Amino acid sequence: MSEKNAKTWVLDPETEYRFELDPGVSLAITLVRGRAEVFGAELVQGKPYLFGSECKAAIFTWHVTGQPSTEYVSEETPMAAYGNLHIAFEQMRVRALAKLRGSPVPEGRSDFAAEPPRVLVLGPENSGKTTVCKILVNYAVRAGQGWSPLLANVDPNEARLDLSKTDRGGWGAPGALSAAAVHGPIPTCSPANPLGSAATSAPMTLASNAILPVVYWYGHADAKRNHLLMDRLIRNLGVNVQEKFDHNAEGQTAGIIVDTPSSFASGPGVNDHRQKLIRACIDAFKINTILVVGHEKLNVEMQRSFGSLVTVVKIPKSGGVVDLDSSYRERLHKYQLHAYMYGEVIHPPPGIKSATQGGETLTDLILSPSSTVINFSDLTIYRIGAETMAPSSALPVGAARVVSEMQPVLVDPSQPGSGLLNAVLAVLAPFNPDENERYDEEILDLTVVGFIVVTNLDVAHKKMTVLSPTQGSLAGKTAIVGSYEWQD
Image 1 (cartoon, helix red, strand yellow):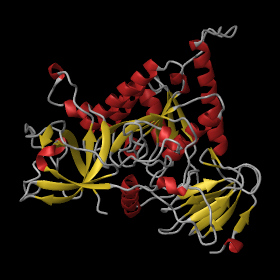
Image 2 (cartoon, rainbow, N blue to C red):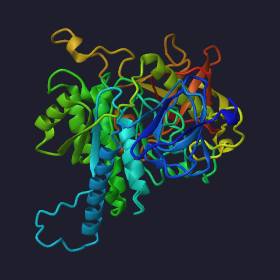
Image 3 (cartoon, helix red, strand yellow):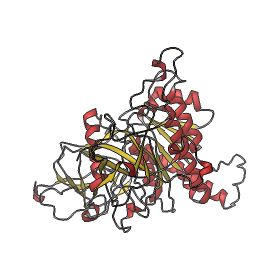
Image 4 (tube, one colour):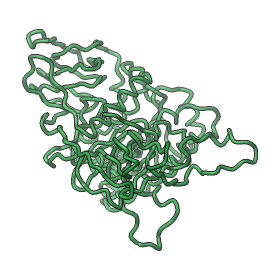
């Protein structure tokens, strides 16, 4: 489509342009005049922004070049409600900072609350939870007060945060739980990197590379698969977040926003595993506000279960939220893992010569991954629990597991059925150098330093080929394999 065939949209206040892209289709959007934002991140006037990889988004006021499969203007948006939430959270931040600096309590306000917002976002599948988190974080960053709120993700079905590698940023991978302080607006250009673009080997001039999160590896898409492991990793993440806050007293006043899996919002009864995981989040991150996105029954349940501990607020679901099927989610995981290894460049529509991707120049987002042959003995690989594990309720009465859900099981690459070919491995940080601190499940408490994929197994010569975003020795390293696989 040539630039002369571009469409121009003029929108009234509080309306939004929504679009959905088909596979292989890109879209360029330029703000001609006025002000516009995409999920809370402000657009720069006159600069073309690219979107691709089946992106689904909503923007206010712009000039469009491209051919979405679906596009329309909606007057029914929840942005006013989200804006009011931001104002309430901003007031909490200001009060918390004032208390920290010893400012006097307002006269007649003995009940003056001064806690920063620590928010847990819950909602069913396809409710727009991640979008709500992104908007609230972006509004906080744009407030001009120097806030750097923490954004935590405990949904293993998505890759959302960049992964730290020494002094560089990198891509996250599906199956990870993570948290990071956000210093700049989070752009939206592709579902392969929903919290912005960064390149593993890119220079630090990239604004998005300033994100250096802490990451733990769960390794599966379904949060219900191993609830004990999920509970432990959530609490580990909470400990790391608290350590960050302890070292930066003023930084903690910006608060934290926690995104959750849809399985936290559905399930029978009130005493099942999901309730325990919600309680783990409340305890780990010291949550004081629960946002329930568009689900009346869940709102009532949260009020009944946790209303005495935290403030529970029901917020509207956007009418622009798209129902995502399993095939789309499978493609999304492939996009994310490909982007982790190779970066991602969205090719502009015909007629667009110069455009940015999430505000970054396109050449900065190309990676050259390293394919390396290593010995089986170079890398120690574990699987947490058995490869296939029935729920405890399915075991015979009185039966005990041979392998517990939390037990690290050594994987031998030379054995048939090791499950390592095309498997995604999380490479872990080193063990505690103090041998006196070593314990059986220590690897569960180690953070992730990077991800690799096993592309070939040579059993006869006891060697394997691994693909990684950057070069570096894996000798003496420890890794965990989950259930994710990827083929280039």
